Amino acid sequence: MTDRPLLLLDVDGPLNPYAARLPRLRGYTTHRLHPANWLARQRPGSRRHRRGLRVRLNPAHGPRLTGLPFELAWATTWMHEANTMIAPGVGLPADLPVIEWPELFAKDPDGLYWKTRPLLDWAAGRPFAWVDDMITDLDTAHVAANHDAPALLLRIHPGRGLREEDFAALVSWAEGL
Image (cartoon, rainbow, N blue to C red):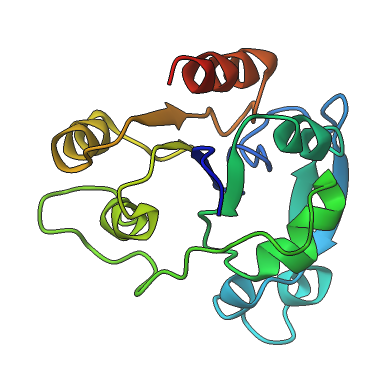
């Protein structure tokens, strides 16, 4: 553990711009992966099950992320598979800490994004930046009211993924601590 703030990384949206309109995005490579959570929702033997999930990853993201003044951790439904399937494609270490969600896609009684409460528990009062495509104003308000340390919730457009302005925002926020 370091004194650096946490950078909590979602995969789908920030690293895998799954909603991109173009079939080929500059700098991205396409991978066919078979994550367990996704496979469990496919019909065994179906074409999708055999081919795998299409994931677009930018190999330049890993060096950019490791160069930031943060301690990186996965905050994704990919959980430990992010280290084995995503990390090699983006150039991240294969041993990043992982938030293990108590229940995937759990309905929150107050309408928060299902990751928000477990993520706050996992951060355990440390400063953090969280990049995800599903963060809402409600989540931002909840974190501000219930987390004593600084926090940046950075919503990433799922059609664009992490961009230069997002990296700049992360650096600016970290330098301002």
